[in-house]
Image (tube, rainbow, N blue to C red; front, side, top):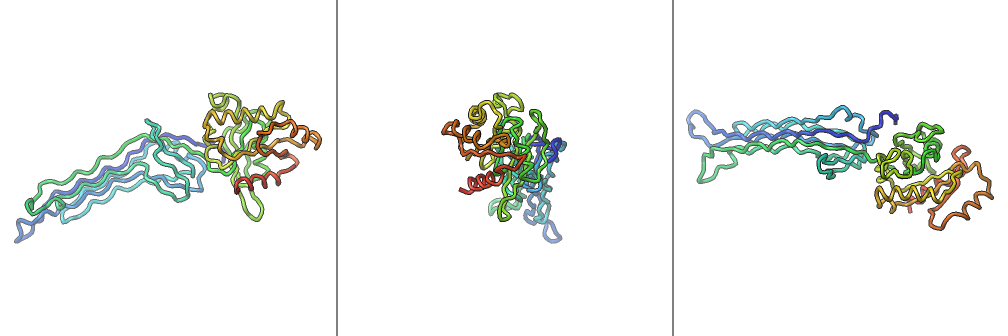
Length: 331
Protein backbone atom coordinates (compact mmCIF):
# COMPACT_ATOMS: atom_id res chain seq x y z
CA UNK A 1 0.00 0.00 0.00
CA UNK A 2 1.84 3.09 -1.18
CA UNK A 3 1.76 5.90 1.32
CA UNK A 4 0.73 8.60 -1.14
CA UNK A 5 -2.06 6.40 -2.46
CA UNK A 6 -3.74 5.65 0.84
CA UNK A 7 -7.06 7.50 0.94
CA UNK A 8 -9.42 6.63 3.81
CA UNK A 9 -11.87 9.56 3.65
CA UNK A 10 -13.85 10.92 0.71
CA UNK A 11 -16.95 13.07 0.38
CA UNK A 12 -19.15 12.40 -2.65
CA UNK A 13 -22.43 13.64 -4.08
CA UNK A 14 -24.91 10.89 -4.92
CA UNK A 15 -28.07 11.24 -6.99
CA UNK A 16 -30.25 8.25 -7.67
CA UNK A 17 -32.46 7.96 -10.74
CA UNK A 18 -36.02 9.22 -10.64
CA UNK A 19 -38.82 6.79 -11.32
CA UNK A 20 -40.54 6.77 -14.70
CA UNK A 21 -44.13 7.96 -14.94
CA UNK A 22 -46.97 5.50 -15.37
CA UNK A 23 -48.75 5.59 -18.72
CA UNK A 24 -52.23 7.10 -19.14
CA UNK A 25 -53.44 5.26 -22.23
CA UNK A 26 -56.56 3.48 -23.55
CA UNK A 27 -56.66 0.58 -25.94
CA UNK A 28 -57.94 1.42 -29.41
CA UNK A 29 -58.47 -0.98 -32.30
CA UNK A 30 -60.68 -1.32 -35.35
CA UNK A 31 -64.10 -2.37 -34.15
CA UNK A 32 -63.20 -1.62 -30.55
CA UNK A 33 -63.30 2.17 -30.13
CA UNK A 34 -63.87 2.08 -26.39
CA UNK A 35 -61.14 -0.26 -25.20
CA UNK A 36 -60.20 -0.18 -21.54
CA UNK A 37 -57.15 1.39 -19.91
CA UNK A 38 -53.86 -0.29 -20.81
CA UNK A 39 -51.22 2.10 -19.49
CA UNK A 40 -48.10 0.35 -18.20
CA UNK A 41 -46.00 1.16 -15.14
CA UNK A 42 -42.92 3.35 -15.16
CA UNK A 43 -39.51 1.86 -14.49
CA UNK A 44 -37.59 2.26 -11.24
CA UNK A 45 -34.80 4.81 -11.13
CA UNK A 46 -31.24 3.52 -10.76
CA UNK A 47 -29.81 2.80 -7.31
CA UNK A 48 -26.34 3.77 -6.14
CA UNK A 49 -24.92 0.62 -4.59
CA UNK A 50 -21.77 -0.09 -2.57
CA UNK A 51 -20.12 -3.49 -2.99
CA UNK A 52 -17.42 -4.86 -0.72
CA UNK A 53 -14.17 -6.00 -2.36
CA UNK A 54 -11.37 -7.78 -0.53
CA UNK A 55 -9.02 -6.69 -3.34
CA UNK A 56 -9.22 -3.01 -2.36
CA UNK A 57 -7.38 -1.39 0.54
CA UNK A 58 -8.07 2.31 -0.10
CA UNK A 59 -10.70 4.76 -1.38
CA UNK A 60 -8.24 6.22 -3.89
CA UNK A 61 -10.45 5.34 -6.86
CA UNK A 62 -13.15 7.66 -5.50
CA UNK A 63 -10.89 10.61 -4.69
CA UNK A 64 -11.54 12.27 -8.05
CA UNK A 65 -14.97 10.77 -8.72
CA UNK A 66 -17.02 13.09 -6.56
CA UNK A 67 -20.36 12.93 -8.39
CA UNK A 68 -22.35 9.71 -8.88
CA UNK A 69 -25.56 10.15 -10.89
CA UNK A 70 -27.68 7.09 -11.61
CA UNK A 71 -29.94 6.75 -14.65
CA UNK A 72 -33.64 7.70 -14.54
CA UNK A 73 -36.34 5.08 -15.11
CA UNK A 74 -38.34 5.25 -18.34
CA UNK A 75 -42.06 5.92 -18.51
CA UNK A 76 -44.60 3.16 -19.05
CA UNK A 77 -46.20 2.60 -22.44
CA UNK A 78 -49.46 1.40 -23.99
CA UNK A 79 -50.49 -2.23 -24.09
CA UNK A 80 -49.30 -2.61 -20.47
CA UNK A 81 -45.66 -2.09 -21.43
CA UNK A 82 -43.41 -1.44 -18.45
CA UNK A 83 -40.78 1.28 -18.63
CA UNK A 84 -37.14 0.20 -18.45
CA UNK A 85 -35.40 0.48 -15.10
CA UNK A 86 -32.62 3.01 -14.75
CA UNK A 87 -29.14 1.48 -14.71
CA UNK A 88 -27.68 1.10 -11.22
CA UNK A 89 -24.25 2.45 -10.31
CA UNK A 90 -22.22 -0.13 -8.39
CA UNK A 91 -19.15 1.20 -6.58
CA UNK A 92 -16.63 -1.22 -5.13
CA UNK A 93 -15.16 -0.23 -1.77
CA UNK A 94 -12.72 -1.86 0.68
CA UNK A 95 -14.01 -3.96 3.53
CA UNK A 96 -14.53 -1.78 6.56
CA UNK A 97 -16.03 1.16 4.67
CA UNK A 98 -18.62 3.21 6.57
CA UNK A 99 -21.04 5.56 4.77
CA UNK A 100 -22.35 8.57 6.71
CA UNK A 101 -24.78 11.34 5.89
CA UNK A 102 -22.58 14.41 5.41
CA UNK A 103 -25.10 16.73 7.10
CA UNK A 104 -26.21 14.71 10.12
CA UNK A 105 -23.28 12.32 10.56
CA UNK A 106 -25.73 9.40 10.77
CA UNK A 107 -24.31 6.04 9.71
CA UNK A 108 -26.19 4.85 6.62
CA UNK A 109 -24.45 1.51 6.12
CA UNK A 110 -21.24 -0.46 6.67
CA UNK A 111 -19.52 -2.85 4.30
CA UNK A 112 -17.74 -5.70 6.10
CA UNK A 113 -17.85 -8.73 3.76
CA UNK A 114 -16.47 -9.50 0.33
CA UNK A 115 -19.23 -9.32 -2.28
CA UNK A 116 -21.68 -7.67 0.12
CA UNK A 117 -23.98 -5.25 -1.71
CA UNK A 118 -25.97 -2.53 0.03
CA UNK A 119 -28.04 0.28 -1.48
CA UNK A 120 -26.53 3.64 -0.57
CA UNK A 121 -29.03 5.89 -2.37
CA UNK A 122 -32.24 4.19 -3.58
CA UNK A 123 -33.78 5.07 -6.92
CA UNK A 124 -37.31 6.42 -7.13
CA UNK A 125 -40.13 3.93 -7.68
CA UNK A 126 -41.87 3.97 -11.03
CA UNK A 127 -45.42 5.30 -11.19
CA UNK A 128 -48.42 2.99 -11.77
CA UNK A 129 -50.19 3.12 -15.11
CA UNK A 130 -53.91 3.84 -15.34
CA UNK A 131 -54.66 0.12 -15.74
CA UNK A 132 -54.18 -0.23 -11.94
CA UNK A 133 -56.99 2.21 -11.17
CA UNK A 134 -59.87 0.70 -13.12
CA UNK A 135 -62.82 -0.46 -11.06
CA UNK A 136 -66.39 -1.51 -11.74
CA UNK A 137 -67.51 2.06 -11.14
CA UNK A 138 -64.55 3.76 -12.78
CA UNK A 139 -63.83 1.83 -15.95
CA UNK A 140 -61.94 4.63 -17.65
CA UNK A 141 -59.55 6.19 -15.11
CA UNK A 142 -58.08 9.39 -16.50
CA UNK A 143 -54.94 9.44 -14.40
CA UNK A 144 -51.68 7.57 -13.75
CA UNK A 145 -49.00 8.01 -11.10
CA UNK A 146 -45.88 10.07 -11.67
CA UNK A 147 -42.60 8.40 -10.74
CA UNK A 148 -40.96 9.10 -7.40
CA UNK A 149 -38.32 11.84 -7.50
CA UNK A 150 -34.60 11.19 -7.36
CA UNK A 151 -32.70 11.48 -4.08
CA UNK A 152 -29.65 13.73 -4.04
CA UNK A 153 -27.40 13.72 -1.01
CA UNK A 154 -23.84 14.20 0.10
CA UNK A 155 -22.22 11.16 1.63
CA UNK A 156 -18.97 10.70 3.52
CA UNK A 157 -17.16 7.39 3.03
CA UNK A 158 -14.72 6.46 5.77
CA UNK A 159 -12.46 3.44 5.77
CA UNK A 160 -11.80 1.61 9.02
CA UNK A 161 -9.24 -1.08 8.34
CA UNK A 162 -10.24 -4.62 9.21
CA UNK A 163 -7.36 -6.34 10.98
CA UNK A 164 -6.92 -8.92 13.71
CA UNK A 165 -4.16 -7.04 15.52
CA UNK A 166 -3.58 -3.30 15.72
CA UNK A 167 -0.12 -2.01 16.69
CA UNK A 168 -0.31 0.90 19.12
CA UNK A 169 2.68 2.91 20.24
CA UNK A 170 4.59 6.16 20.18
CA UNK A 171 6.59 7.10 17.08
CA UNK A 172 9.78 5.04 16.75
CA UNK A 173 8.50 2.29 19.03
CA UNK A 174 9.36 -0.28 16.34
CA UNK A 175 5.87 -0.97 14.98
CA UNK A 176 6.81 -0.74 11.29
CA UNK A 177 9.96 -2.77 11.84
CA UNK A 178 7.98 -5.55 13.50
CA UNK A 179 5.43 -5.57 10.67
CA UNK A 180 8.23 -5.81 8.08
CA UNK A 181 9.78 -8.76 9.95
CA UNK A 182 6.65 -10.86 10.49
CA UNK A 183 4.95 -10.17 7.13
CA UNK A 184 5.70 -9.28 3.52
CA UNK A 185 4.65 -5.66 4.08
CA UNK A 186 7.29 -3.05 3.32
CA UNK A 187 6.44 0.04 5.37
CA UNK A 188 8.78 3.02 5.38
CA UNK A 189 11.27 2.73 8.25
CA UNK A 190 13.54 5.51 9.50
CA UNK A 191 14.93 6.89 12.75
CA UNK A 192 12.74 9.97 12.99
CA UNK A 193 9.26 10.54 14.43
CA UNK A 194 6.19 10.09 12.26
CA UNK A 195 7.96 7.97 9.66
CA UNK A 196 4.65 6.14 9.22
CA UNK A 197 2.07 8.62 7.97
CA UNK A 198 -0.60 6.14 6.92
CA UNK A 199 -1.68 2.71 8.24
CA UNK A 200 -0.02 -0.37 6.78
CA UNK A 201 -1.40 -3.88 6.65
CA UNK A 202 0.45 -7.17 6.63
CA UNK A 203 -0.56 -10.83 6.67
CA UNK A 204 1.42 -12.69 9.32
CA UNK A 205 2.12 -16.36 8.59
CA UNK A 206 1.56 -18.66 11.55
CA UNK A 207 1.94 -22.36 12.20
CA UNK A 208 0.25 -24.97 9.99
CA UNK A 209 -0.40 -22.48 7.16
CA UNK A 210 -2.61 -20.32 9.34
CA UNK A 211 -2.34 -16.55 9.38
CA UNK A 212 -3.68 -13.33 10.85
CA UNK A 213 -3.73 -9.70 9.72
CA UNK A 214 -1.68 -7.04 11.49
CA UNK A 215 -2.17 -3.27 11.09
CA UNK A 216 0.53 -0.70 11.80
CA UNK A 217 -1.25 2.45 12.98
CA UNK A 218 0.70 5.76 12.74
CA UNK A 219 2.31 6.78 16.03
CA UNK A 220 0.23 8.27 18.80
CA UNK A 221 1.57 11.02 21.04
CA UNK A 222 0.27 12.52 24.25
CA UNK A 223 -2.59 14.85 23.32
CA UNK A 224 -3.50 12.99 20.12
CA UNK A 225 -7.16 12.92 21.16
CA UNK A 226 -7.05 16.75 21.17
CA UNK A 227 -5.47 16.88 17.73
CA UNK A 228 -1.74 16.96 18.50
CA UNK A 229 0.61 15.19 16.12
CA UNK A 230 -1.47 13.26 13.60
CA UNK A 231 -4.44 13.63 15.96
CA UNK A 232 -7.32 11.18 15.75
CA UNK A 233 -7.26 10.85 11.98
CA UNK A 234 -6.10 7.23 12.09
CA UNK A 235 -7.40 6.18 15.50
CA UNK A 236 -10.63 5.04 13.88
CA UNK A 237 -8.71 2.20 12.25
CA UNK A 238 -8.11 0.74 15.71
CA UNK A 239 -11.87 0.43 16.27
CA UNK A 240 -12.12 -2.58 13.94
CA UNK A 241 -9.13 -4.50 15.30
CA UNK A 242 -9.89 -7.64 17.29
CA UNK A 243 -7.05 -6.97 19.73
CA UNK A 244 -4.35 -4.36 20.39
CA UNK A 245 -0.61 -4.93 20.71
CA UNK A 246 0.94 -2.04 22.63
CA UNK A 247 4.59 -1.46 21.85
CA UNK A 248 6.98 0.50 24.08
CA UNK A 249 10.74 0.75 23.60
CA UNK A 250 12.91 -0.68 26.35
CA UNK A 251 14.93 2.59 26.46
CA UNK A 252 11.85 4.51 27.59
CA UNK A 253 12.28 6.42 30.87
CA UNK A 254 9.07 4.90 32.24
CA UNK A 255 7.53 2.01 30.32
CA UNK A 256 4.42 1.79 32.50
CA UNK A 257 3.81 5.54 32.18
CA UNK A 258 4.07 5.40 28.37
CA UNK A 259 1.61 2.52 28.29
CA UNK A 260 -0.78 4.51 30.53
CA UNK A 261 -0.55 7.53 28.20
CA UNK A 262 -1.34 5.41 25.15
CA UNK A 263 -4.26 3.80 26.95
CA UNK A 264 -5.52 7.21 28.04
CA UNK A 265 -5.48 8.59 24.49
CA UNK A 266 -7.51 5.62 23.26
CA UNK A 267 -9.99 6.06 26.12
CA UNK A 268 -10.48 9.74 25.29
CA UNK A 269 -11.11 8.88 21.65
CA UNK A 270 -13.46 5.95 22.29
CA UNK A 271 -13.87 4.31 25.72
CA UNK A 272 -15.05 1.09 24.05
CA UNK A 273 -11.48 0.50 22.83
CA UNK A 274 -10.54 -0.45 26.39
CA UNK A 275 -12.75 -3.54 26.09
CA UNK A 276 -10.42 -5.07 23.50
CA UNK A 277 -7.83 -7.67 24.43
CA UNK A 278 -4.38 -6.18 24.98
CA UNK A 279 -0.78 -7.37 24.93
CA UNK A 280 2.37 -5.35 25.69
CA UNK A 281 5.61 -5.83 23.77
CA UNK A 282 8.81 -4.24 25.06
CA UNK A 283 10.80 -3.57 21.87
CA UNK A 284 14.51 -3.29 21.09
CA UNK A 285 15.18 -5.90 23.78
CA UNK A 286 18.45 -6.93 22.12
CA UNK A 287 19.93 -4.14 24.30
CA UNK A 288 18.89 -6.00 27.47
CA UNK A 289 20.25 -9.07 29.22
CA UNK A 290 18.15 -11.49 31.26
CA UNK A 291 18.96 -9.74 34.54
CA UNK A 292 17.78 -6.35 33.25
CA UNK A 293 14.59 -7.91 31.86
CA UNK A 294 13.87 -9.51 35.22
CA UNK A 295 14.42 -6.19 37.01
CA UNK A 296 12.08 -4.39 34.62
CA UNK A 297 9.38 -7.03 35.00
CA UNK A 298 9.60 -6.77 38.77
CA UNK A 299 9.15 -3.00 38.57
CA UNK A 300 5.99 -3.12 36.45
CA UNK A 301 2.60 -2.53 38.12
CA UNK A 302 0.26 -5.50 38.35
CA UNK A 303 -2.34 -3.99 36.00
CA UNK A 304 -0.17 -4.22 32.88
CA UNK A 305 -1.39 -6.70 30.26
CA UNK A 306 0.61 -9.85 29.43
CA UNK A 307 4.11 -8.63 28.54
CA UNK A 308 6.92 -9.95 26.35
CA UNK A 309 10.38 -8.61 25.45
CA UNK A 310 11.09 -8.70 21.69
CA UNK A 311 13.69 -7.58 19.19
CA UNK A 312 12.79 -7.30 15.52
CA UNK A 313 16.49 -6.86 14.72
CA UNK A 314 17.56 -10.23 16.16
CA UNK A 315 14.14 -11.98 15.96
CA UNK A 316 14.20 -12.37 19.73
CA UNK A 317 10.87 -13.82 20.97
CA UNK A 318 9.13 -13.12 17.64
CA UNK A 319 7.66 -16.63 17.45
CA UNK A 320 6.51 -16.57 21.11
CA UNK A 321 4.88 -13.20 20.37
CA UNK A 322 2.98 -14.78 17.45
CA UNK A 323 1.88 -17.57 19.79
CA UNK A 324 0.59 -15.06 22.34
CA UNK A 325 -1.31 -13.16 19.66
CA UNK A 326 -2.81 -16.31 18.17
CA UNK A 327 -3.91 -17.62 21.56
CA UNK A 328 -5.44 -14.26 22.50
CA UNK A 329 -7.32 -14.10 19.20
CA UNK A 330 -8.77 -17.58 19.66
CA UNK A 331 -9.54 -17.70 23.36
